[in-house]
Length: 281
Ligand code: GLU
Picture 1 (tube, rainbow, N blue to C red):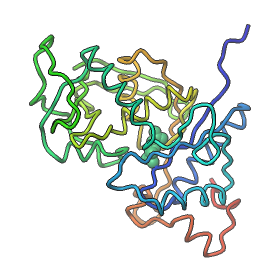
Picture 2 (picture 1 turned 90 degrees about the vertical axis):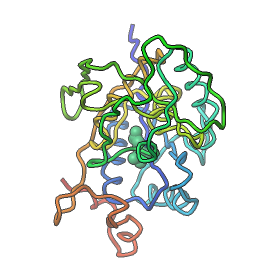
Picture 3 (picture 1 turned 180 degrees about the vertical axis):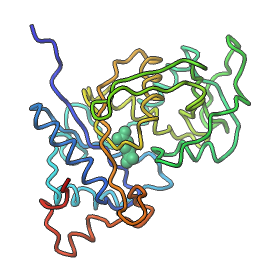
Picture 4 (picture 1 turned 180 degrees about the horizontal axis):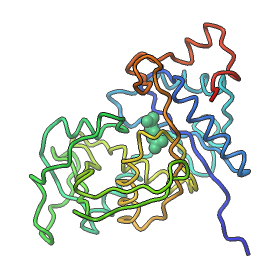
């Protein structure tokens, strides 16, 4: 008997800017892998970072995704069995996961720097990895945790198993290794302004939406280790991972990013580009 669950993939843009060539490449790869497996593609809009997400970008992304030929079967515009597909409408689920992490003793309140908290706002990108947390607010093992009080001015940090060697097999890059506490440290799962961090939201959603394979950019390879710790802590099954190579700026060799004024798909379309020719190898 075949017990493999049916393939479910997702594209998960954040409406913090217009989509660019880098997104096109990752999303088209996600679609290709999903189609090859006869799976279902989900669109999830990652808009919990209220300080950076804009309605204008959210509206544009549907249009840009369609222009590049992405077709999704579940999403904010068409619904589906795991609605809602906008993260801003899923906050109660993240709060429940936070409480579960608290019950199981995996997190602690922290009052450290604003920069650390900023780093937890959204998915980190290459060159933006925070240095391992020095442990300033980390309580002694077994210490009684204060209760979670909504609106309290603390953020909640996940305690990583210091020194543990972590591994996973990436479907694009092969075996991956990292050491908890050295390659990355205790990370924020809930911000002091009462907003869940990307790491927590993405795990809760990929599990709840029964995603079997996550296809995303290689800049998130290290984040995957954090997320695997969250899956384990919450007793959830992790999906498979395929980290697609990044599109680099041919002039600087840097990763294309919205914030570096990368050519947006809107611009390319306005210039008359043919979406079918966008992604050559
Ligand atoms: N929303 C994230 C981003 O746009 C993607 C996160 C993910 O695919 O896990 O960077």
